[in-house]
Image 1 (cartoon, rainbow, N blue to C red):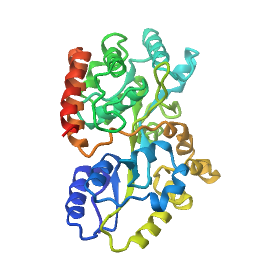
Image 2 (image 1 turned 135 degrees about the horizontal axis):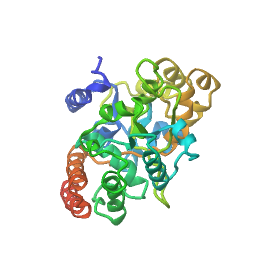
Image 3 (image 1 turned 60 degrees about the horizontal axis):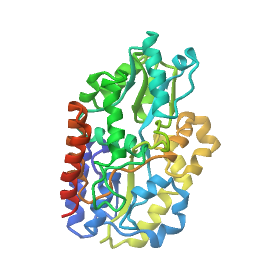
Image 4 (image 1 turned 45 degrees about the vertical axis):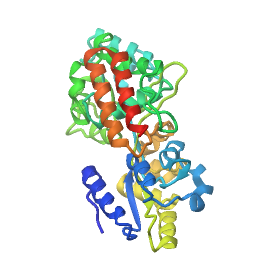
Length: 359
């Protein structure tokens, strides 16, 4: 059975829900977006995997294991990873003698100087559209300030905390205080924010790994050979936290082929198979050790350079009610960014999210 491609995420989700809910054991194995893992686990559709893979959890990126764990049980196995990252203009930073920013303050300073010197039109581009991508951007900036949308147990909202307010206030300030981001970012998702960057109009961009290939295409990009990639910046006392993306494996709790399913996942998640998929299909491995392979470094040097980025990858809120939580977070964060009433709107959104997850 063939599912729709990951680009048709909603259709994939609907198809899996319908099939797993029948509890007839089909499909035996499935791939799932990281944001569905808690939903499928809470419904009892995903087989707990600690018995089979508990001893190798330490061989995967911490963030992917965290995302694959619900209610202290491993219910999915990491397969392919992506995360938010910082794209930057190497040539422009060299011109002003600036280092690749590690903190948000460093990035703001470099962006403001480049704009003041008329070296770039935009300092920092990101995605503020009221959509799932806004949650992704928010998760990164929140976690980089030791904040989050939900508590670790997923049972209460933390979006109204002081650290969370400070983080979202920063996104608002990139537009209204520092003026390094155009107000247009509030209606942009990935591609509208990518185009000005590869068009040579921006110094920094938050986006996913797909941008790098486009940026290096001399036919489609004005910045080919001038783009670098780094972990997203963080606040003082925080650490880089790119929002985790990717598809991970699950085993149907009702499978009649449990032994074969475990054997298949063991093979698919092995270092050898992950290397093969990385080389042939560009799917980034979830095992840090695979990134050190000499063949990967030779054939996919950009992917190999992403190891530090993925080391800090952070999952989105883990809750069976993720769709409702995401919509409430999108609405509240969007209103906070548009109105500037950051604390007020985040506290209101936090109450709505509390009502969702406490039921």
